[in-house]
Image (cartoon, rainbow, N blue to C red):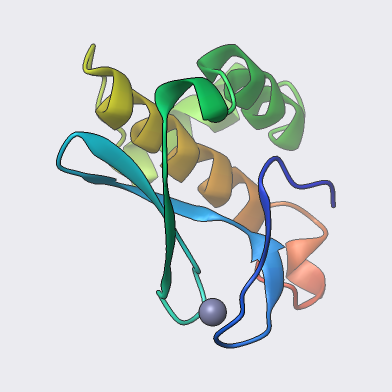
Length: 110
Ligand SMILES: [Zn+2]
């Protein structure tokens, strides 16, 4: 499956979609497998919310109900704070990958 921000972790060696979390004023990239810190991202280096939303929509078979169910499941939080907003959508995107048919074959949406 295509990745928006592919990561090859130097620590555990896994190739996967990146993890992101808010860290103070920054967005921190980390390995989802071993949680190793990779680097800080500036807002302009990150995929846009529009890009992430489009991927979420595709991964959920363009079914808005599925997206909304998933939002409840991951406790998605609407926010205007840019870094937090990015991480909320990223969380939803990763959950969408985890739930897709590819990951059911044992890839865990990585
Ligand atoms: Zn790792």
